[in-house]
Image (cartoon, one colour):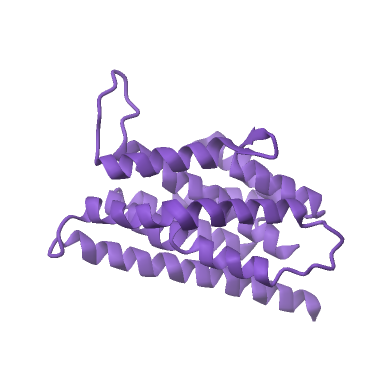
Length: 230
């Protein structure tokens, strides 16, 4: 289950992009005051609610936990990812050096490691429009199309071991495709300003890099699968 063992890292690091945007585009301080653009504020808070505590199958659950449940149901090993996550979160340090140390300690798959490093490069830029571009174009606007393709091509002869994973995919297609994708594009207009604003150039570059990171992740997974077949 190489695909699961790599992709779970992308499910996890998505939340760090989201939390950076929540810090910048909503108020998480005390005392509280209305902060940020109204459209962006609504988008970010809606996604945090869904990703961190969605209601699926009669229970409140984060999408990462749902994904890990689907991995376990499909008999995919979650130990490598969980070791990495606990190591990096315990250190509270997400510099490249710390990420590499956590990857090495957990023996993380290389395609996933490179993808996560790219994600945290966007975060380390300290520029909200760059993080927003990676989020909007590399995640929210892309995922419904990607997951629809996965569902269409899903092997139906696996005895139901992917049932929980299909629930995860269908939930993202429903929410991201109908609401969050279009809202994320309006968020970009708010954080980047008018057409002549130079932030658009940096945002476009970040979007291209985020899409390339996704391509590189899946190319790396295919390479690992081919190596195992040989």
